[in-house]
Length: 99
Image 1 (cartoon, rainbow, N blue to C red):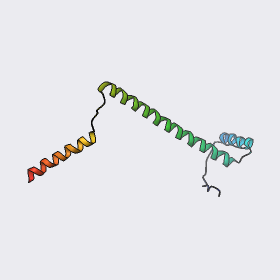
Image 2: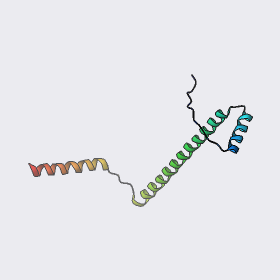
Image 3: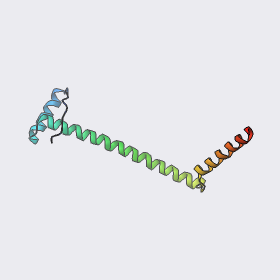
Image 4: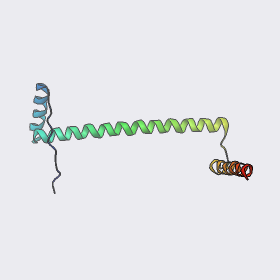
């Protein structure tokens, strides 16, 4: 089953149109097919750049985490459980005040 395509109108400078048409002719493809391939390559490159930015941000965060661990050490406790227990104690204190 063929992929459904959506018609879109694109305005090009005459020189860009000429170059695109020449590229399509050299490849033995239609102008539309050549343009779809160019758009796909552009979108793929944008996604690749975005992923690279995310990888760099994560690497920077990892470096900061390692620097903080070296500087301050790593907490060995269970923060979630400790917060939960503290909240339960607070609730018990409130309950005792109202009982």
